[in-house]
Image (cartoon, rainbow, N blue to C red; front, side, top):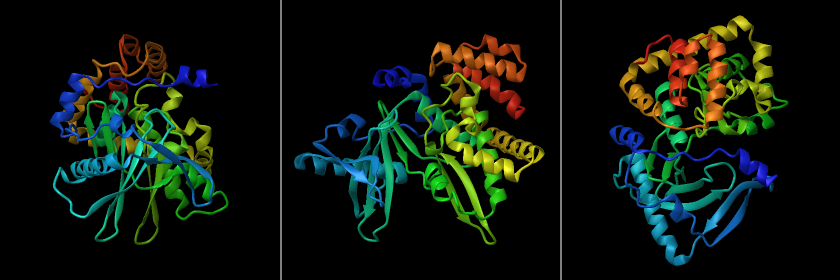
Length: 343
């Protein structure tokens, strides 16, 4: 089984000079005082259990006492860079460092506490990967939500995205009739369309969150991805549509119960119209990113060839066969979906 997992594990793609240039121009590149590899020199790991006593995939990280002070000071500086552009924030303390062995990035989760008001926040330190960087930048452009992140060589630092993991939400609401059920169904349709248009893959229930906002007269919902490393990597069209993952079947059933096909198609069109407006507002940034992506490699030839064939059939567009990489595939896919000419 381990060999099978290794065989199908997504490879990491190096961040090359052109992408690094884009990141510097848009203030995403920074000289970080600590790297991902520095955090891996730990002394011990202690399993972290949930409130119900069940084991989680996270471990509390312990370092040698002579290393701990240095690591904490540098993590505080990274947090200040992430949220305040390097301005000094007084009374910060690193309360916990946790490690997750699950997934491609094997992230460290850092808990920061303000000792004056007892307010706390989280951020993540992960292995940098070109796929994840392209995914985060496309989130900045095409999503209604923004994610703050910084890159330096082989390390990426990402802010915590607040919300309830969808798998947990599904589990705790199995027998509960949620408020504003129509809005919830509408949001899933829009989220599904947004992932497909910008070709963000592997959006299973544990890779996105439910953000709940109490409006003046009802509850509103937003679905947001928290994992971007499968940006334009997969070879099958269905893997860019959350509706096809069995983990999301409860959401699919709910949407089918609440919405007719006509209503669902209307909401999908609304989301594409919103994405077109976001593109037009960030046209130069989008072109800068896609120019680099069209000369980069962030998937395998097998996946690229399969996806361009499936999308060519989906759009009835023969030019997909001419695409040499995923950047070209994404560009050609965006144009008919948004009704724009990018280059």
